[in-house]
Length: 264
Image (tube, rainbow, N blue to C red; front, side):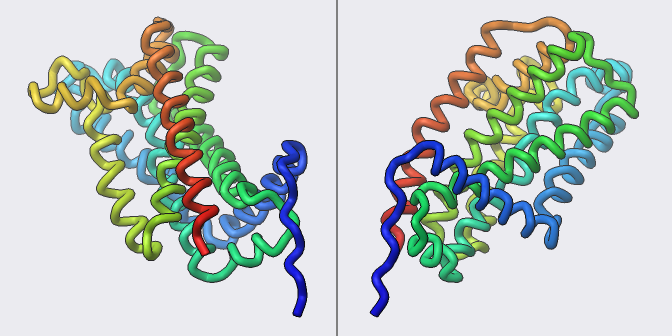
């Protein structure tokens, strides 16, 4: 009978190295099955084009004016909110297919598989942001705040996507199968995506919907990115976006890691 190799101790640099190797594994899988990237780009791109020409004139008078309201929200949607369901599904499949048991027999950090999966998603979010930015430029969007503000908005959107991804990781660890992950994540994140300032300012929404949109963390991130891209940076909205990102990470990352460690 062979004795399992001991797991690696709490060495930060080793954890980073192991996570990078497993992130590469996740990216190789994406290359063979590009569904997560396609979904993360195509869905928000469709929202951008449809919303722009359906609601542009009624909401803002012109599609050009409406694009400056709509695009920052689409950027946040593309930077994680649309494609991150695949994160939980991938973790769940590894648990059910026995891949996780192989990871646990290796001298690597117990958190490396989760960090690798989320790290690969960050690269996918970056690709989605680049493609959506190119589409927005073709449609006529221009970042009034300049390049630094545009990079800040993209970074804030990706940071928020990274933090929210830990919610789907926790769902993936706890769910019985990948189908349950998809269903539960969809029901959870649809109100988060659409019950926001994405399509219209919150003060134009019905009272009950406005109450939800005003406390929705996605709204704060969209407003912060909108302020940066439109050249009117608001420290209040940026601060709220960063606080929400930190809160989501500090709550759900430890819960996901603990639940993952308890899975047999």
